[in-house]
Image 1 (cartoon, helix red, strand yellow):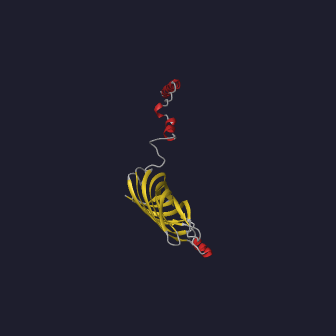
Image 2 (cartoon, helix red, strand yellow):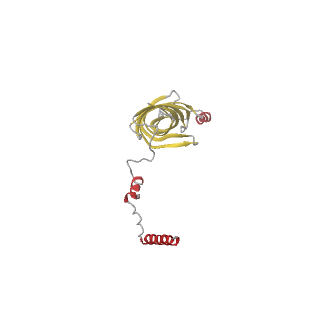
Image 3 (cartoon, rainbow, N blue to C red):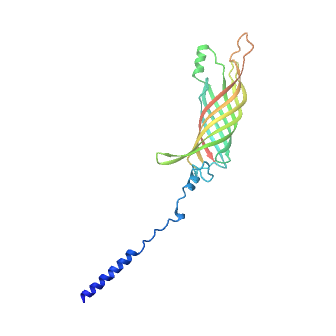
Length: 250
């Protein structure tokens, strides 16, 4: 009886193995088209020359668009051959968007003879022929092509931008003369480079490098005996100032 049962089990196992061996292998599931990665689409999105939906630096924390601002600043002139001192100024401006704006500028100078002028007086007994800047005001257009975020010692993020200002206005100056200074004014042109660092929504530190040009009349300091003419003609004078100030954004 035991032998008969063992024989039946062997036959059933053999039959099942044979059926398994003859069954065709299952075909692998074909890759669905929807699972394929479209590399071309990614290239068109992120490597295109211009993509209106993508910017290099997005999500600005401090915006300038449609906002007024007021800056108070002070600094020094550093290209005047005969004068030194301080220059104080103020700016009132408005930005239409993050790139373009305009501002009104006013500067007041407090200058006196520098060491070179004093040495000239000691050596020659006279003051050199020159003019001294008194004040200026300009209407300027502003373009801001640079905006960036910068890490400070891995502790904080600094937000800053850099721009250009181009303006036209008026320059007031005085001609130094022995018998008394003579005040004059002339049309002036301005080219400035500035950078501002924001540290809150309403306040920023601003640094300006300001160049102005004006066509100024030149006279000799002394009326030389025997010479009636003291007019030296006119000269295009460049005044450059480095100024630092605080800006309030409304």
